[in-house]
Image (cartoon, rainbow, N blue to C red; front, side):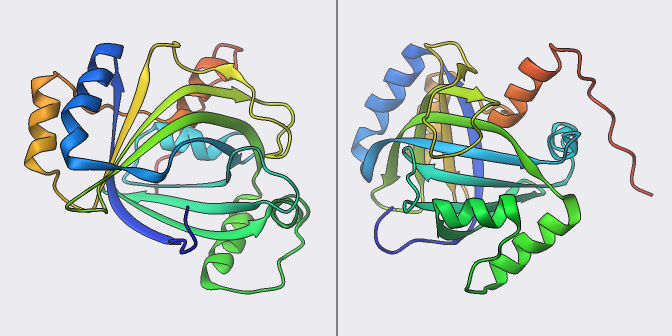
Length: 243
């Protein structure tokens, strides 16, 4: 979140649902090995885009070898001239590839909601255009959470984040209209994410093992979909098998 913004990522991402005791143990145990992010604590706001019948999240929940999604993200509640990130996130064979472009919030809404393309061009914008033409997605859910972020001292590409107060709404689907929503997880549960370019360092593997912390398959959007839509009787339509 500094002046130099990374727009392309390739990394392994692991997720863990922590109890309060596990969260405290992780914070204490990792302290000698990490340093706080430049903006160590902030709120992340996301708009997730999907087809009218939720094809993308239904496909994702089937755990395919390849999956992709599009979201618009801001750090804190955006204003018209705040910068937001348009992110294409793809996962293939366990490796996450993220590509993103930056626009102000008003221009981003015109682009994704009205089809008014930005003045500049790039390979990533062309990839977003292709995604839009392929799926014709619409904003389906707003998801926000409060994040604490740390980076490795020896390897700054290692990132450890803790997300709390995960919340979602299906109205006011605009990053400029507040960060409120209904809770997705119990209030005392913490979502930890490890973002690493390769193998985890030994100190981190030992810390996870000593505290009985195991990775889990968890999607914020997928969890909301299963909790809210399926409970309302919207069926989880099976994804057709590939020919």
